[in-house]
Image (cartoon, rainbow, N blue to C red; front, side, top):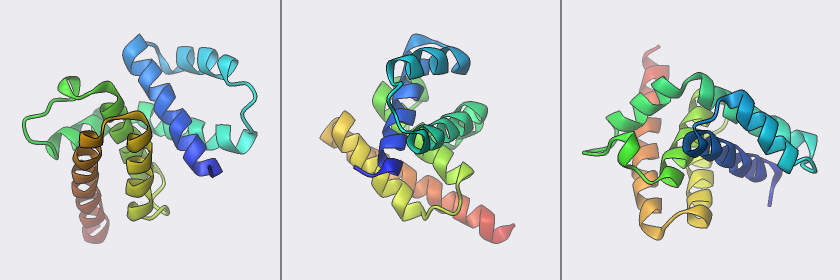
Length: 141
């Protein structure tokens, strides 16, 4: 597994911990890295960066996700799916040099590992729609 994929998985786990444990980002960092202290610095660095973007822009990210789902509120989504989406949208927003197709493909691979087969299609549709909206914003300036 590549370093970026591992970072994305760790960011997902951190977001899940914050979400389900109702912990602050600082609480998550403190406990999460104590349990994952053998992680390489480059893997940890990108995971931290993704987690930071996701937690700094939670309202914007959740709003984008909800605006691209029909009849789905964030609190009704499976926790893993919700946080896979958050991590991917955070990467789309915070790391625009990463191609949208790469971000979506990575999110789908992570969803295949941590979620249900039905979730993969749902996540793909939402991320594709969010990505197209973000691309239009970049083009229109």
